[in-house]
Image 1 (cartoon, rainbow, N blue to C red):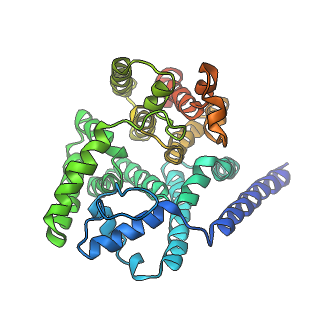
Image 2: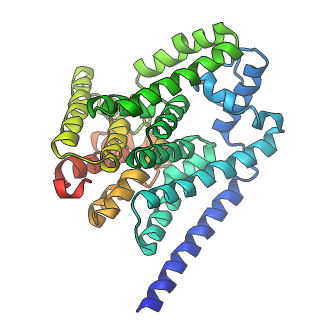
Length: 364
């Protein structure tokens, strides 16, 4: 029986490696649209040109000057070579994230193989690689933040959290959680580190570029919802597709956030379970949650596997992992628009598992 188990585990790992190799092979000479935007913007930035005005890339730039500064080594290389290195970097971040999660809470080789397989075949993972997105770097930083805060290494936890916020605003909800949880050390280190990361561009770049980013990019990014475009799988996309009232949307978002925080403290959740729940909440209530953002759900999925919530995880995953190619076909009626919100529904199911299905004994 043990021999059969080893063969099965090996087979799943080989299959996962083969599928991943195929994905990377197909992307090896591709354009990586989002990375091309970051690359072009970083080049402009280091030539003292405002990348938020002078863009000629796939999409307008919305990443902070702090993050673009980190790309300095890559823009010394030709774009084709830089994109290949970037693809290897973000792929490595995926495996490092799984390693850190394993260090937080070890699971069997078979479970680890299954999680790896389901992640690699999912559309959010392929979408992240295909676009050259930063989500796998963000995933790694969140995992490192979780690991260090559990180990009581508050300085490192604060640095990893601030780095993740400097890349994307998604982890901002962790800040009020730390305050309410009275983890003043991590909160202090994270805010100080974030202040340093944000001030560096003021000393290295033109001040007007930083001011323009804050006023014309950062603030609108927080205020303006992305609407009902299919790739937006947050609650704002769901409400927009169903033409529901905006006031009801805001009330629902507040209820989700408050009820989640109340659940965290009522159930006395540990850091791993609390951070897992907050990742879900962030993806639910954000102004936008593109499908590639859903790769961050690896953290709560991993947590549920450690708590043997296999069926519940599979039900949620079944809504999250796929993509609809001809979305316009389904947008003509109510049921079709609900179907187009499959990622939101899967994330919502995951949220319900954490707030309703997890017992106090399962949340540490």
